[in-house]
Image (tube, rainbow, N blue to C red):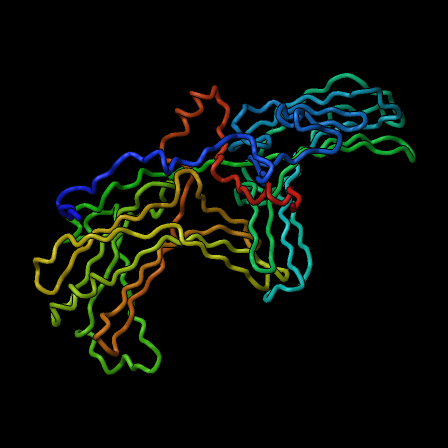
Length: 431
């Protein structure tokens, strides 16, 4: 057997005809089963899958056709301040009508099951959007037969109804025993006189607003920051405090014997999703020069997504944490005895898929940078250094809004990366 050289890549050969590659086809065989070929379509009763592709929804008397641009989403999707442009058509005349209206309706629903460990079972609903447009109103005290077409174009407001928080995106999260969902609908109401049946049609839509930093972000931490970080207003220092293990008395250690560690990062603490967050770390141990080098190998930096839902009428909070990325750590300079400078690069999640937002006291999506520095294994009775820095992530980069609106003739592009596939999985039926 000939051994490959470690300096050369391994040798490859063509696959022989005795072991051909498996065959693939778009049509399943008799022994195969298709679980799901794509996004599920949430259909309104009376409409077909072909109608849903055209965003056409029907009931006994009504037909609603929405005209958003085709973003490739299974549901009509709208961006920040988007206009819900559509036409309401009566499929057959409707008698004794008092009012015809179209409403944009948004609800935030938090439900806790009986198996929830921190919540009282129940469902809490909050209206975040209620915007009504009257398309037809009969004279006072009378009714009419209504037919024909009625165009409508309500617009998403920037803030929650009767609040100052920005209107949250469509959102679904499943936590142990707790489910939180923010859903939006276009609702058509036909009010008829007397005991006659009122006609209603509800169309699910997605609201996916984009967000951007208010200032440009730094590409890297300036080299001059190592000497004096206070001279550059674009960056800030965050000191790390020691955390002593259980059973260890930190008062027996002199402060001068402990390392001084600080994290340097952009002052804005706001980054676009998918960008690289520049950071630097300074570890100073004048009395133990080798300790700085040892600690530099035990640096762990993470970006954490924290999903919160307040339950039990706001008295408790359910938290779910997801690890988005780990930092790459590079030792930049250890020429000064007892001091080590490290450069770190942390990716802010996937491009277009992360966004920090909050509905005060109800639900929130937060992002934090978590830094942990463990002591060397052979060093006993030594503290762990930790810190958590809240940051804000946006869906898009700074300065992209104007060019995007020009390219789309003023139509706001939705943040399609915020669309959660789990929202559609609930409409499927188990095999």
